[in-house]
Length: 262
Image (cartoon, rainbow, N blue to C red; front, side):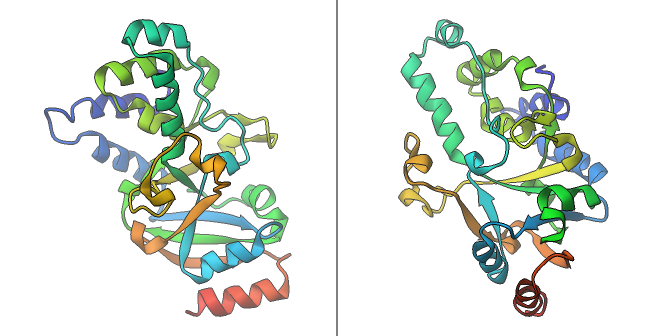
């Protein structure tokens, strides 16, 4: 369909939602269970920056969902499409299309995990030991989405935008959040080694951000970074915390006392 691996079939199955039972979600869960072993996923955290915020989030038994523009890859949510063709094929104005795409970029925040525990992740995401790795047990796979690594410049986003606008499709509501370029030019790392799965959270649903109002570029205008939510809300529990060998004594004591023993 679009050359996006797993998600081509996922979208095909979502097309049946109008007149058939949900065939996409069971397919996604079955696929995730081929990746995730023993229901365990991992989060590597560095304490080189924002240590206080990260520790406080852990103390409150929460996870941090990031605004995508704070992530380490500038190509996150890149959608390269031909505006003139979209206008011609859909009849919508350029202004409406631009507003719609912007609203989509503002909709969710992202919590990234890996389904494999590997030393590589310590180097790239936990400052070579100045950090921790949290092991979570997954109780509800429906909250997770596998990340597909594909060259975004080869994806026909023009057709995706047209299909979404003409057929009330779901392509744009999900796909830009769950695909990544294989190589992260910003951080100069091989993204495929992350073995990433993601959780998406909408901070507008419970009026937690901007009183639930979605507005143009609102997150950037308000210097929004993300939101913390209890991990138990997503069927997750911490089963282990591995402390890096370069963590300070103060950080180790806080994690041991407030997180591991509470």
